Image 1: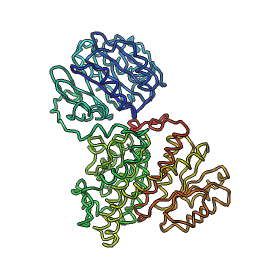
Image 2: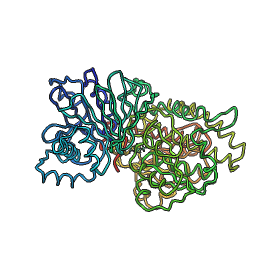
Image 3: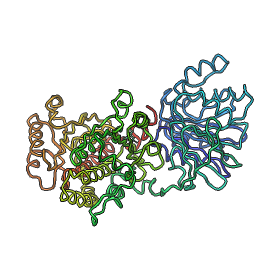
Image 4: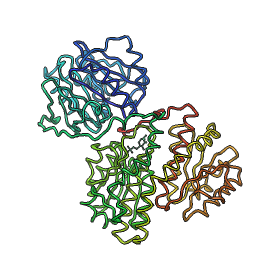
Length: 611
Ligand code: G6P
């Protein structure tokens, strides 16, 4: 949510910043801006995409070796040129960009107004710029001291990049609650919200922790806390290839990421599941595995698609390991005074590892004494650093705002956890365990096959692209898949869609069914197959249009449904991994046919770092 990029060094900053903003545009895209320090500070900002900003500055002088850039997802103040970042302080000494929310901005604003400060914008960020400047001028202190003192008065979350006109050889970065990474090059430094804008320049990075302040200058890097305690920077090497953050010939990142799933699932279980030795080894859980086995209860928390993966996890862990599981929206869990016991295991699922509600829920669970595990995709992000143990999904960078390969990678990790627990607890038979391992190995090839049917999804999408409502139904493991299918469609095509457990249809949604209502039924062969066949008949009896996801050769449903989309068979515990693929592609095609911006749907952001 909001992307930050900064540069200080010998190179021209502008191209580095613009390119970096394009990499970060998935975090927010309602406006963009850049400030360059070249004797004077030049600020350029524009409502809209980074490409609109580029057009806006086309004829301007954009030289300078120091600069900061921002792509915004609005919280305080509507998206317009004025509210776009960077924001300058009233007397022009400071310019800054900000990701997060200053919660006490209104009180600070009143105080600054009493002291003569005037405000140009509705943003909380301008308040911070003025607060820093006020302390700087009143206390006659250095920019660094002014920043640290100002931040000690701030309540809220921030990732900040700050320039001071009077100290033109310095960039200051600070973090609390919103991620920041420093790239360390040869005599140059980069600042970014995540490593994607940095990777093409350097592989050496420092992840800032909460309350860290980094001062980057021609004389090197100083890292300290807001309270002025010196810290030793820990430089890490990032394992990220530039090809992973490019579209590589696909029209959209989302399509590329859907097609990457055979590989991303394989990468997630490779080295962890051995078909030869018939074993599962999850190194990240090794130390706490005995606690997991003895858990009386597991609570899974997450948001959005990650919450849907958590629901699949509930079915898996209860089914295979016989441990009671509850799945909670992190945003509800953190505020509803939940009962948490010291012997509870909390599993937090997050692609980005930065979702504010999930992070806050983790902190709550830890305070209550629970053991917290993370299932995250972004290495070095905040959640893996907050949790007691965890398993990374190896899905690679996910840039499309609508999550696809992260979901299947999360489900893959949950399958491995459930199987490993089930085996240790002797809740599954050795034969079943062996079959599941073999079936998991076959999943990537089966997805490859599903992807070859892409034209069919396009054809069906074309028929229903103008529908105003869609219903998605599934039972058992396929109920969360129905939810995820509906979420994908509404996120990127703006068609209203509901996901429902198929049996619940008769308690409400059935009233909506008529000859204009497409109903997507996820109906592969499992223990509820007969039941879902009856649900299809109920839809057809009311003239609804049935698009059914079925196993190859299913003639029963073929004779009832308007359209069938076939997929290979697998064990039902793994069925979410296959059945979600046609739903992802159906949504994708409908969104493209409706001329929607698939990778950057309106109002959404990839990483939601505000609550
Ligand atoms: C946003 C994204 C979703 C994602 C959700 C949770 O809403 O647009 O795709 O599922 O956040 O994000 P996380 O990074 O915690 O999985």
